[in-house]
Length: 60
Image 1 (cartoon, one colour):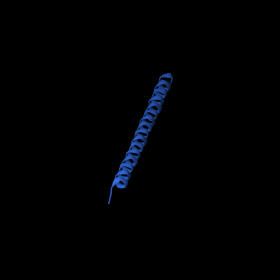
Image 2: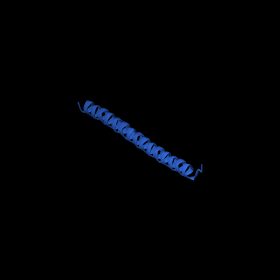
Image 3: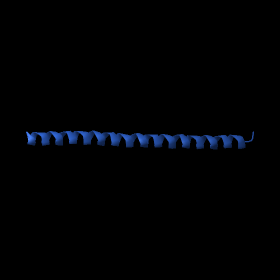
């Protein structure tokens, strides 16, 4: 009985550790996606500013 209990606790520990690892990994992926999205929107705004400046400086 004691050996079965130890094996059961070990099995539960492995399952819990694995689920925490998966959650941690997904958290990092979400964080990277948000950072990439922010960089993209920032890049888009800079491009829009350059186009606006070029349009304002253009003489007909």
